[in-house]
Amino acid sequence: MGRKRKEPSIADELLDELLSGEDALAAFQSGDLVQNLKKALAERILNAEMDHHLDADEEQTSGNHRNGHSRKQVLTDDGKMEVAVPRDRQGRFDPKLIEKHCRRLPGFDDKVISMYARGMSTREICGHVRELYGVEVSAELISKVTDAVLEELKDWQSRPLESVYAIVYFDAVRVKIRDEGLVKNKAVYLAIGYTCAGYKQILGMWVEQTEGAKFWLSVMNDLKARGLEDILIAVVDGLSGFPDAIEAAYPHALVQTCIVHLIRNSMAYASWKERKAIAASLKPIYQAENADAAESALEAFEAGEWGQKYPNIGKSWRRRWDQVIPFFAFSATIRRAIYTTNAIESLNSTVRRAVRSKGHFPNDDAAKKLIYLALRGVAAKWKRPPQYWSRVKAEFAIRFEER
Image (cartoon, rainbow, N blue to C red; front, side, top):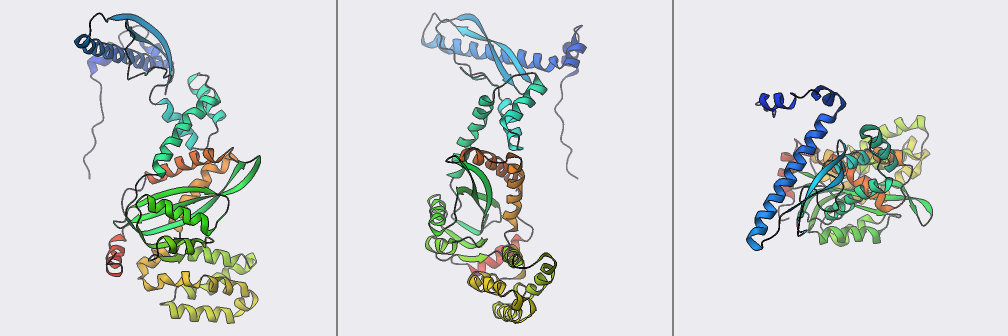
């Protein structure tokens, strides 16, 4: 077992001194004790900053000294707090703990963003802050706090990428967004990449109304501009125009259609009571030993009961056959990794849960803020490569040795 982590502690002498006053118990029960301690500590830090400022000022010029205090109310993660901010006579003191024009201490913004990430609206957050801390904040303030996420999102979306990714999954989730006075069903495109070392990363997020080769080419060019030079295998959900776009940007990449999505699309042709039997009839195709055996299984399906009744199922597989068969060249371990976009489907389900309570978003930025926070929360849990990755890496090293 690992060594037990030692919890931080406060000396008994300090606790005795803190609790020695007559009103200590009342302050503790009302919640004022922690707030008063935070206020005292903030003012102590501000005064220490002023001492440092005056000492540095003395070396450059003389005559500057303290000039009383100004009262300032700031929002903290525990509620509203009034602090005495020291002033200097020459007005050059610029505190770091509570910067000029700053009305919120570190911690408040984090809590607001955490609530927003859980799908709460700005007005719901206002009510929650009022109930918990007795503080009135405006919806405009909450929007301003959450808008800070957009700058973080901008940096994240333009960050440098690895030069090569072993597997990249592309997929889309639909979100309702108001645009030009109408609520439109827009697609939010996501890309997840496995590095050659097996670490999973979210490569980017793009919002667009339609799927097509022109849009996907712009996505590919964005990835290339950020340093992604090669993709070994791209797994896609039958996105219109994607094979052409990826071949233009990454001509050596293998494009693999998500088999699970292909099965799901096949089920759309049949009634509910028939789907289980049809799914069983399709299994011999994608579980075949090789591409030739898979094609024979597809021919058998087309000639069988369900293929005759629903010829469009066979046709849908035939249309994508060039993107169905690449995974047959790999071992069973790699097949399980690439024949489905389950890795990104799990991410999409997290996004859907986050946006479910919203109804629709007022604009693209509002949708991006919330979705990015949901993605950030998921990505924080990705700590290590999957257990089977050593086998994947060994096979890829042989098959893609020159790359």
